[in-house]
Image (cartoon, rainbow, N blue to C red; front, top):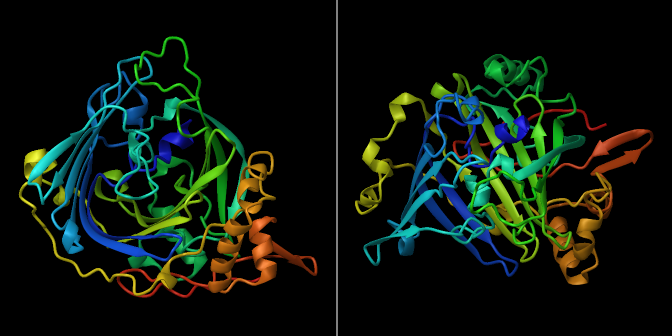
Length: 425
């Protein structure tokens, strides 16, 4: 349960208290149509520690009070310039009446603000595979959490620096970066004696299964959905052991199908949640039902109390101003080749929970031909593709287990990623 609190998708728990950043969001469908948007975001957490939310009676945030405020506005392309949204999330308890998030969207063409209300938690946001629940509306206690094992990940976007220290401090030396990481992490997240990096570049993770819980007697929330009516049956999350950061998630529907995948790249800043904290710098999402990819990268976030926004910025009235408070040059993607390939299926990993759930993809000749073709376009061999599909991502030769690694590393916005050397055997 505590791991679940530490790994909320939307920085609802243990992000940076004040964040000011810009991003490029790109979407790619199966036919190769790519769209990109440039946006600016202000975010504020209204608590100092994740335990402020765990203890409903003694914590800093009381039931029904606001926990997170976020304001977003798009600058490009021209047809969405000025489109903005504001969202305020509240703390809910399993034994109290539910308070929905306050969410407003501004349309510059109509000069009108509309408010989102009611049962929209399962709705996807702005043409991405992400739902409102994925972005923070889902409560930890709405699921039953089970630690199903441990795993080592190699196939991440910035392999092996998926869980990286503040990128200005990166050296490319796993040992040195790991020492920086442990030294600067908040000790309240656990005793930090390990580097997040293995010598071979792998990232050690806890693996947690989160199943949508049955309605429990005494739970007073009037919107606690019936499990059969909720769009997910369970999720599986990979949580990095040292930082407790969520870096990979798979979602499964009631037909036992793997339907969505999400992957995060985290940067860590010294100073704890008040002055520093955790910030995602890249993300990748994949919808297996539509073979739809969504990818985004963030400018280096500004953190700390001096980046706190005025109170009125998180109101619907502020959206009418269409105000861009910063100017940054974020390069757009030049081609679809910069998109990461479809995520690996790894049918041999945790087969009790995962192997059968990908049968519907593997048995579809059209789906597998598409995924295989894209993998080959990214440089994977037939042997590697088999390890990504039916194996555990490892190729075993001569008594050695060699991990399949992505043959690319997307550059950070402010330059190329550092070369990282690690043994291949």
